[in-house]
Image (cartoon, rainbow, N blue to C red; front, top):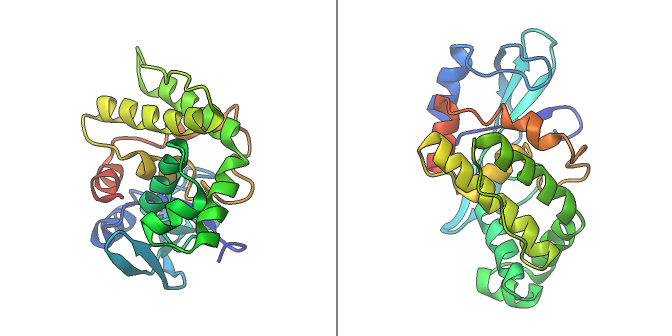
Length: 223
């Protein structure tokens, strides 16, 4: 699935996603063409705060360029067995000074899983900070920039939080930080190769974080 299809983050309301597909309301991130339904990706389990849930992402195909896309729910990150909200809680705990063993105990997750999250995110701290700092500037006419925290981890997570606040103010709705992180990264927050160009990614993706019906449902139901 990862090799053959690109990813596009959408809301978790399956009925709403089907409605938008049928109405031509989803655009191809590559050529801006109209996406149409194209079957389903492999079903898998994802662990949330209240236990595991089954996710079977919708698959789509662009009517223009013919490229297929997996419509990844906003609560999910690519190739991760836990929701974005759970993983985000681990990253926040790291900023607060907790080690991976303590975080694993507090979240009830395997030690190696948590260590993998921290290792992957820790390898791209500056790139993440830059992407979300650019997004903060893009979302507001007089944006409140994230203050320096004295550490790279705090600066990266602080930039995500600041971007979520900027989106909340602009769209007049609650935008959870880790739902926003999933959308901006296209589900690849912890995946190899993201961000491909930290200097431009935030600006390019900002145009896709639009207050349309699908994004509204995504942030309301997101983790």
